[in-house]
Picture (cartoon, rainbow, N blue to C red):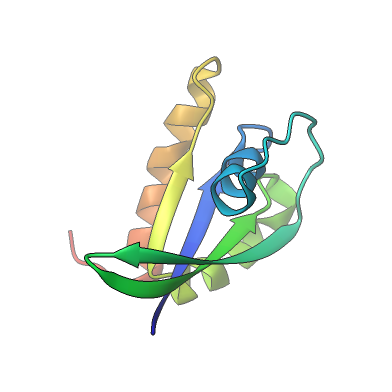
Length: 108
């Protein structure tokens, strides 16, 4: 079975954990509890093939930015999350995208 490492990134409080838990466990989390790091696994079917998703729910606070390079280096896919009611969280995704490209050494 193929495995894929996904990393969920975004500012603190935008709903990364709520989105991840809803997808993995079909449970909606309605209270905010800042995450340092949580890892989830879910088996899914893609193109008639079973695969395992390893989903890393990351911290959104600035104090944990040093760990982001490692997440990005090991990740194979990235989910960038923002709040529709806070434009600055959308604007911050541009920097996260650039950081992913830098860590992955992707030429523009």
